[in-house]
Length: 136
Image 1 (cartoon, rainbow, N blue to C red):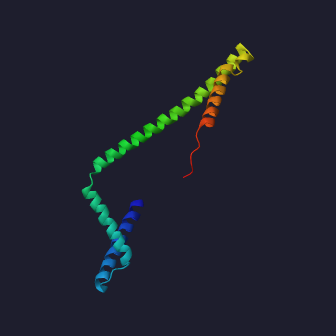
Image 2 (image 1 turned 120 degrees about the horizontal axis):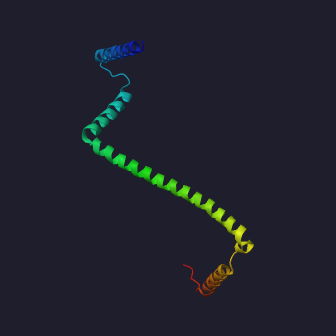
Image 3 (image 1 turned 60 degrees about the vertical axis):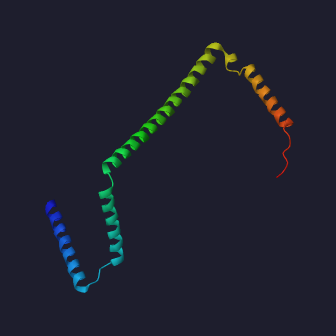
């Protein structure tokens, strides 16, 4: 029954096309001329592309681009997953070390603070000795 419906639809479309062509030839006017002209231009463009473009090379190039994009996305997602696991393991190791080594391990080291103080002093010295720039 399904095939019969498609056959009837096809026959109705064919009959409608023949009636439209007969009507247009008899009246010498085109029905919906502006829309059909635009459609004709689009069909000509598609036909030109299909005859002049190497579709095999185009498909190969697009497949290469798609593969590169998928590879890039997979590498990015794996990096995100590795960093997430790294954070979890870092917290776990820190907790284990503080549990076994005591609370002294969890406190920041003095050498790091000295380094930050030295950098701050150097930065302040640079800002203090910078010459004034004249306005333009």
